[in-house]
Image 1 (cartoon, rainbow, N blue to C red):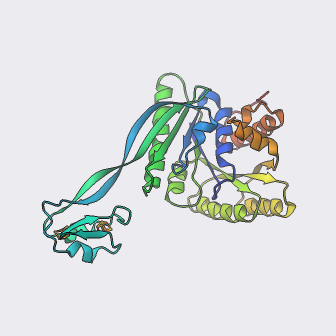
Image 2: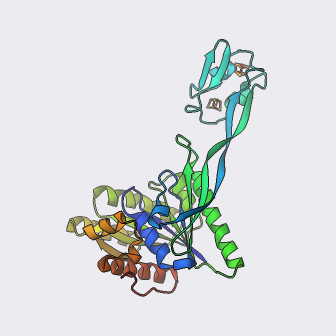
Image 3: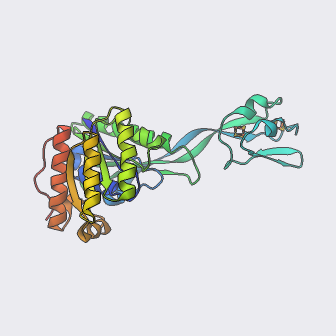
Length: 305
Ligand code: SF4
Ligand code: SF4
């Protein structure tokens, strides 16, 4: 079993559509792991039904035990993030400002600052219409542990693959839908990747953000292949996207044209590869074949209607 991560460096470049096409192309032998935990929507794209949901705890949060607090104010003095609020001689912590550095715990002479395991969100498994697993998550608004939750989604997908294999239903690949950017949750999404599909949106910000992603992949020694999305709007940006892929020795696996039929398929919540629109289904099938071939997986025939 291999892991294919789909990333783009920016939001709105089409990586969820590409990820769900790749997962749907594998049928019940693929698992989709939606690591974009701030805006998870792969389960919608896979028309999946929720089968389990567990609470996700993000780790240490800090609170002041009012019974032990003497009001000395030492915690407020050491906190570099101005997170303490004194009220009638008792200090409380503004969670939105706390960076969880722990300095106040060391400074408090009364042992009044206690830790709590904070609820950070939910980790969920759904079944798609292809009877394949979709692992996804929901982060509590304002929580800042999306990297840890993204890693939990990836690990849960690996557990699902193991469980499926133990039941005699082996999985060929986990397809990971990475979040935008190049931060901690993206690194968590790339950690076990055998191959990264870089979706380059053919435009100024798309090419710039993809460049930073290629640099990250190179620093992590990941094999990459490129998909140029919204191609044909401006030949100059198509050329720059190809030149960027070439600079990082990344083969261009597919050009997806800027065509309203892709958007219409997405609006119908279809996985492109199974679209009722033959043009979309064939384009996505060719994309899948190119990705599977580079990843060493069997090719697919043309799907859709
Ligand atoms: S350092 Fe401890 S005892 Fe002093 S004000 Fe802060 S929480 Fe209260
Ligand atoms: S853990 Fe750090 S940031 Fe949070 S309240 Fe304590 S000193 Fe401030």
